[in-house]
Length: 385
Image 1 (tube, rainbow, N blue to C red):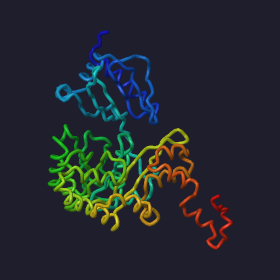
Image 2 (tube, one colour):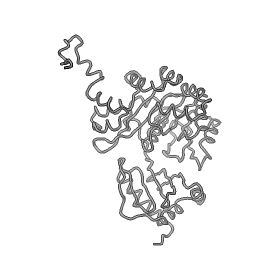
Image 3 (spheres, rainbow, N blue to C red):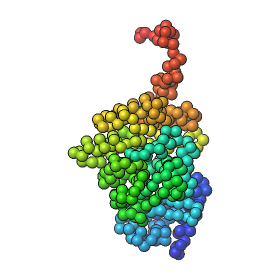
């Protein structure tokens, strides 16, 4: 079947509009396969027609510029953004696989949800008032990192008069100037690379720099330098918890450089938010959050390479500082009837410990019910036979 110019883009827009209408997050297109949409974490088929390799090539030629298509053919993959008028914006990727071209397009919500609407813990809002240092939002792809970062930037935009520069690949949430002046740069369109844009940002009088991702050693080095010289730096990493985040940053550098980098990280890190999206009882998803907030103890643990003690420090600081581990977050969602016991155990870092806490072992409310002066036989202890 011959495909005329523009036909595949029309088909693409039908797919994307169907996805938006049904609350989907990602559209998957693959040569030789039926299109699929990810909805609430699950892939579902969209129609019955399979896409051919020719159809996917035509789609790429229709929606990419000649330079973009040439880069796709040369690099065998391409990141770009796609827009449907004022209806929707998408972060997109083309890549070659053994059957031809494939593409994944993720919807970027036009509306920037507030921290309150996202129902994130109150301590997250405190990061919008930090004046310098580094704040990282981490998690696997699709865990809501960009949504959380956008909400924090929007809070700053509402409450502070700052100059914010973002460097992203591509630009996702579009921020309108409110109290802040915001310049957003897309790698490949407005900048050659993260590192070069970040170097340039240091000469552009920023108060806050958002780097879409800490991808390489040069970007991390410049980001740490920016945070050390009085700027507030936001960025993301594909790590699963605070401890791994510290290890990933330090481990990126050669062994002889790691002590210096570790001291720098200990000095500049103001917060780490590690996210996972957990299926809820009502069919939606809720964010499980590990939250690290800088304290003198946290700074000391990082500086002294005692990362293994960080989870204990986060757990103990919940009531005073608002820090928490993933398992504490999961337990809160379970106690509030948002997630099932099975989901809490499946996503828990330590399922056996989670099971004990669900039974009341090691939780303050249960301990208060025990009379320390009660006779031993009240607890029905039995001697070994």
